[in-house]
Image 1 (cartoon, rainbow, N blue to C red):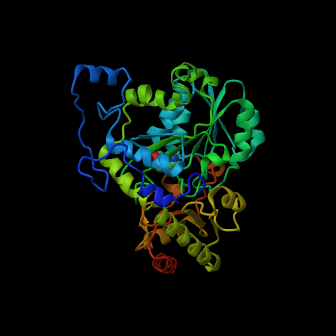
Image 2 (cartoon, rainbow, N blue to C red):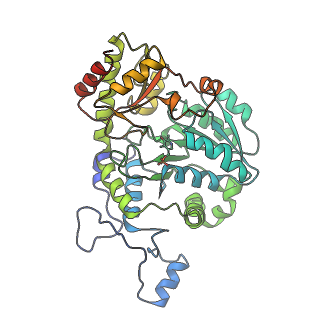
Image 3 (cartoon, protein in one colour):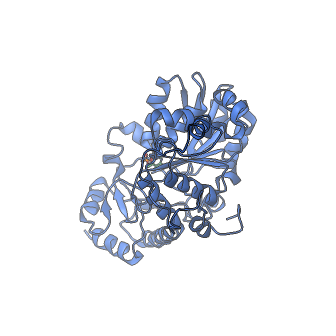
Length: 413
Ligand SMILES: *Cc1c(COP(=O)(O)O)cnc(C)c1O
């Protein structure tokens, strides 16, 4: 992509180590230890005073985790990256870091369930107001905005509705109102989505999904594009005076994640380092499989409708081409004639797994209405576009003929 001459995979594979490895290991080793020693009182004093940069204790920083952060920086061209223990740790740390008690967040009404709960329950209990809005309509967002609005928060593609926000429109509104644009891009990782080009200030991502390499480990990242002037944000004014453009990452590292303890482990970082190298290959295969499935869905009489933003029948197709290079992730939904038919299909699956995750290497299916959204009322489900006739698929990297063969036998009832 455009932020460096070399391609995504090349940059991931060849990101230099922050420091030469003592044994010239070709893969970054897993630095499993907790503490690091110093050769003198003066050195350790300087490190603690922040005058010299060194690892001291792995909850705050670790060489294997640091290398993952460097790789993410190198593939995204971001100003700074912080890795954390999960996607939720990344989201919560960023929002707590950006919004002061009394400030508000305008957030999408269609969010990943635990993000929604964080915004609905936890953040209000800390004195942060949250206003839920339809982020696909910038007039609604403008109406919800006031002088205490600090953040617009939404997902690049909502799940399972598969709606796409016109990010440039929201970021223009954000500039007018001095609001930080924070986007959860888990479904559209950096290989297909260059967030800075569309005016995103902060990208958060669950690296558990595409990046870990097949749902191998939990992780999250905060990506700071370096585009927001932190001196203009109440929560970071003081941090900005001391750390300038690094105000947010400094506050996260030195205060929030250090105190809340959402650290990525070295073993996890190792999975992320390996997973990131081959992520683009996996994304390409997933997208290819989604296209093959879309074609199959078109022709099967039992499939009443389907949604995939990479199909030109989707209302957001043009945005998907513009924002995600026509590779809008690997989540699809389709509808059968009844919930009963969905259950029948589901119980007959032999290859596709009955599981709730996204972007495993294996294809996964779930019936959202009876599982993830079981606790919601019918009215709430309607508002969220959760139909009892709908199945969500997270398409994996199997050979597409095998996925389609499983569909063929599972739909044969
Ligand atoms: C999975 C997911 C999260 C949460 O990530 P964890 O790593 O499970 O904490 C957040 N947002 C989206 C869009 C997700 O799919």
